Length: 298
Image (cartoon, rainbow, N blue to C red; front, side, top):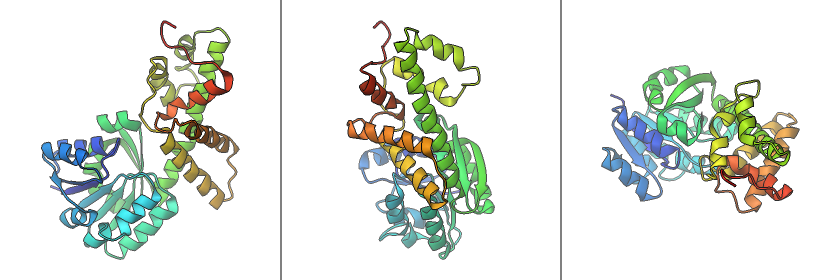
């Protein structure tokens, strides 16, 4: 049985690690704050005090961290994964980071005999809890096949995209689409309401037609019910969109629509709403129009 380590037990990481544990894999966990570690230890995991300690004990070490600098520190910094690395170790990173950061980490750890997979995910906290995430993988295919049983505990759709960094490029593409859907949903809901039409009926009418998408299937009812907590936090969407635009600039690719969507999420941050769900970008439109989306019974 593969022995697995998990570093980063946040909104996504904790339920993903729990699913690995439920699948029967011995699990070693590490997190900056102790609470999530204690929860998983109560379920049978083992705690480690340092990333290096995790890596030294396992066959596969997984990370799920907020941003590129965090990832570089945990992977390559003092007392990081690199100090516990051993030949044949498989390193899987579920974070959303810059493709060039993923490539750099793969190169440095590869010199230690580590097989690296950048494997960002999509599907939100619901997918993380249910084990139905989409996982986009960059790196050596042989490492993916060895790690597949573990990834199958976390996700339903696992796709090998290409070499190092390719998974992160796929996540860049994913976030372009997700942001566009969130913004479009905000616009259509408030437009319908301002036009005197029930936005619930509009959603019911269009979500099985050409406008069908994951966002319309999962997000409108939460907004109608006044539920705007995460989910996937808006400030993390802003971070991802900044990565999208940085990547686009590196390849000389204009993304005017995504640039606009990024500014809307930046406005959320400026309004102090960065901790809300990314679907709460509708709040920017509410501020611009002076019109709030009505809750049931309003």
